Length: 143
Image (cartoon, rainbow, N blue to C red; front, side, top):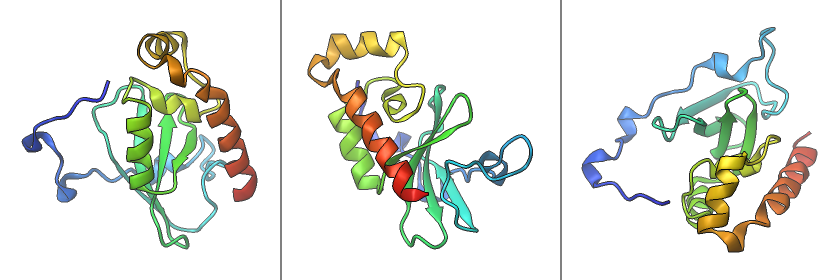
């Protein structure tokens, strides 16, 4: 459910929290393979209130443009959108339902999230498979 907060609750650019470099590394200290391979990655967390994962605006030094990525509860990263504008459009399209970003992960939606989808976005229920196919296509191009 899309919740519009009064402007006093919106974070200012200066208040955005940078994502620590350790978030881009595996337990062995290597860069997570799903992330872009550019030498320099910088990210800020877009929504610090979500408990199911981390939505970040990720800037890969050589790209020249920030992308939106989602780090799920298993610490894996998944590409969501090529810009913040595209991410916002996806959020509106997905009606801001809880955990909608999981449609773009290997894990997919859990049973609780699927119940939300069936109740409030039945017309979008089939999009999980489509979104996963788009993610696989992006991953193949990125490597």
